[in-house]
Image 1 (cartoon, rainbow, N blue to C red):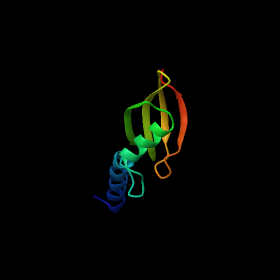
Image 2: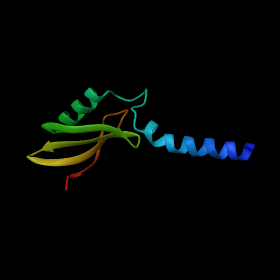
Image 3: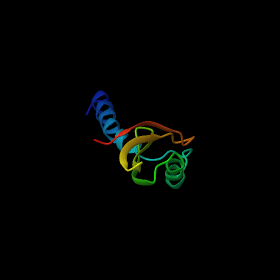
Amino acid sequence: MTCAKIALAAALTLGLAAPALADRPGADWIGIEQATQKAKDAGFEQVTEIEADDGRWEAKGVKNGKTYEFHIDPRTGAISNEHLDD
């Protein structure tokens, strides 16, 4: 196998592995318990799902009897992109 083929194979392998690595909380992130508490502090009575995805915490929760999807900043805990879950 030529060096070019080895480099291409390595690049493809790393490219396929990257999404899996992106779905892990970073070392400098607030913990899942803290993220859940931040959501509750923002008015969510219940957090039904939460996961690390795309460089942030992504969550679902119940607020005022309705289910929402929202993002939680992994460092500050700020809630953003809050919208009704369809």
